[in-house]
Length: 483
Image 1 (tube, rainbow, N blue to C red):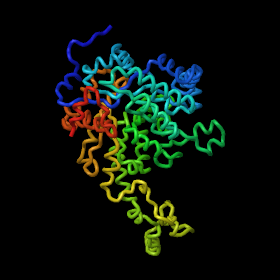
Image 2 (cartoon, one colour):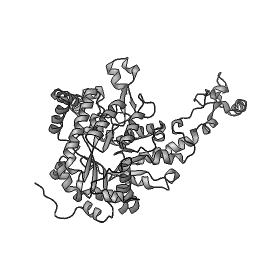
Image 3 (cartoon, one colour):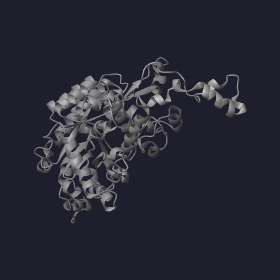
Image 4 (spheres, rainbow, N blue to C red):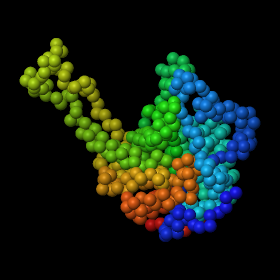
């Protein structure tokens, strides 16, 4: 059995050199499944355990392994994760399963406090069977509340909230926060919904004909009651959702192909939907975090949203209105410059729009209407202030969040340090804080930026709506002292 190291780890030395805590906004534990099954039987009956296990075998990564290569190709089954948890250091492996050991090692990891996310629990919020989904989420939350309760001074687990409908989300939210006393939540960033036209073609077509409901724009339900309940309970929604299996991430043979960028793609979809759906305008005090996708996609999205608004707001877009075209003048250009191949029987009128519809909108369309944007500075209030972005320690593009000279309006996006301990991204647990500081050592960010990254941003996110989030913890005094 491996013992404690005799010398301080690199992360411990990093922490000793700081005058502020390091707050981890996305560590992971790996659930001890037999205990989860016991709790599932307690909350939903032993038959539910069998149903849940059957669903896992038929609908998760096990389904891929049960198929032949020909069957995978025929069904286009996406290559799932494999060997996803570090095994080389048995002490690290035990640490991510046993909260007592993680608590014991926090100083060695250079961490003062960690918000802990599940592993299997991230998969249950979008189970297509409503009874299994709701029972599994309930069991995961009871499990987390019970096993982490003795260690609340240094860590807190998140509750898994199913979001297929706002009603079931509110029900589990009330239970997890109101009855279990959990303080933070994770929600799936989208619900997979069938396309009615595909359903009419049969069950097989419906499997491939789906759309992603991202709870803001064009949603099948009104999710405002859920956001309102979050405000009332003082919790900020976090999303830790993958995008494997849709878009271009659908290789049947290569997990790396499917994995790269998938958290960013999912975060982009939900973030864009909440913004354009006006959620941040209607709920100005609520904050949202998108985890494990980094911040580069958010910097790009922020720039794109501003750039599109500047050219497609209701006033600016009038310059593209086909009704503004001087058709006689265009016809004269046509007569003088058109190539012989352009001189078809349809005449010059058909060439005026270059293949884009020349239909005139009868009413003015404002695709940013729910945001009620009046000036470009409104993007600071509606995007920069409410959104936070979880960044892994070894991602060099984290520096983009702090590049005020590059980001529009001189903005600094709110990056959150997210260790991701427990998963393959972190092969050595005791190196994660040291890796997070690499941007400072390489001159990409300033020490003040690093303090924002690992302390100020997470402290403000987690206490927004709940000033007592860190009450009774090892970092309470430091957080309360923040200006």
